[in-house]
Length: 541
Image: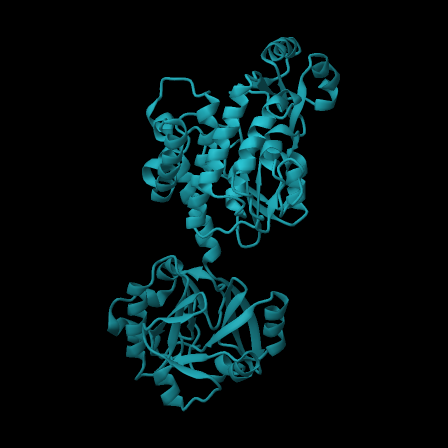
């Protein structure tokens, strides 16, 4: 998957309705995800109380019977989508918006606090009962053609436009006989169509007779709560906070314009659309409604091919990638010294590493990207790594961390100075920082490990290692050996200086290409690092 950062996008949950169902919806999740299973089991109790039938048996035990009984498919769709919402909640995903298509409005209402999961499932059952009491028969037909060109023809057959799905794809509702006749015409004209597994003409005037019965139920039910921010109607395409009493009847009665719903979200900025339905159909519809310039991503979890656990793992990877810190590099110089300092940032907060020389360059980046500075890390006490520590510490009122030994050795002073201890984790805001004492370049040199990034100062460069004297070279060898054992190969290295290679290589690259990581023998390391025929302290070959 490309460019799927959650943090830069509005998360939109899209819930689908009738026609997306099948036996075994979410079965892998039910078998392997405790959150999903617990939610389904709670809804199973509700269905048992209302219908004296088991939702779990209908979904996961019975395999040889048609799955078209509205009394069970209606609550089953709602229950499965609510269970998936609970899984999404458990992952820590907080949607900016939700929207339901048709029956999907029921689960969307749960996601935005309009009613409880139990109330939503009971309402779905009562709606199905209302439809069955009125003996409303009919169906839905998806057609792959330009709706405008087919309009007069489908109206002649007394069919109704139920939904626009995406350009060139729409759904019709009508009686079974009229749908049968229309299918014959479509076949003759070589027009692709699909009869949905639905036995009611949703989103058409044919449903009107059942409204009174369902409104009686809603009148006796708990009052709908005000929606939390971000509830977008699937049939009006507008954000709502207060819903009318008959809203969840209108959800399955009114024509739906899905392109208008997607357009509403795109106007808000780049989005990550998560299809919460069982079939993946809403994901397909969304993709066909997106312009390339929308910079949005569509993702589904469930589909009939039972790969939901695999999809869930991909979603977790997306979340983890967003939760990891990013690194911004600054090339700075003072007199003849050129070096790099860094801002490690996520969730609009940042950690500044070895700030020096160019205050405006660094500060403008923080301000332009709305990054609130939380701490400053100093790998050692040399001026090219500490020049602006005091200035930034005072400006932002943040602590400055340096190894306790380095502070003592250099009598280093700075506002808000805090000693860092080898491998004693520092927790600041969303960051877990591991200080690693790596003496050699100086007696108290320290690397800092943050979210898979290692800031090495002058201990390690991509090309080599830092300057050291005859006394400290043995300490430098020990430091390199420790890093080789301690750091995973995918740790990203950010050194204080560059001598040809670009910072940001992983440690696996250093293990293969940095000559000082090839030495396991102390004497060979010392001899090579302190060789007298080296014309330059930074000639690493």
